[in-house]
Amino acid sequence: MASETCEGCGDRVTIAGGIANIWTLEHDATGGMTLELDSDGSEHFLCFDCIDRLPDDPSGADVAALDRE
Image (tube, rainbow, N blue to C red; front, side, top):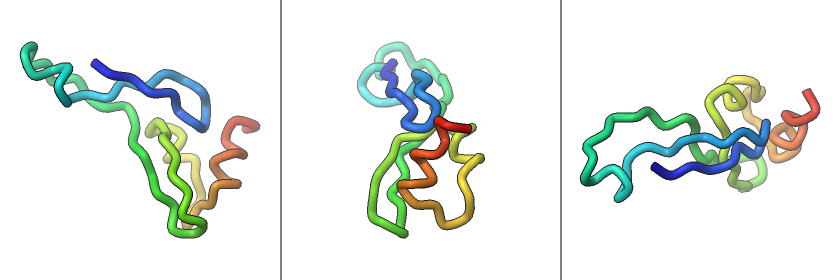
């Protein structure tokens, strides 16, 4: 199973599916996703907890502020 670092909190987040699980048939959940922000066009991988902490219509500055909270 793959993992990626959350840009908000710095935790390692599992990414389910893909070629890593093709032979094992594991059904592990994904812990985050990549968001493309309309306000500035930036992309950020965030865990679901950090996504929940973002304001409506977030910007890259809001993502950068997550690690200071």
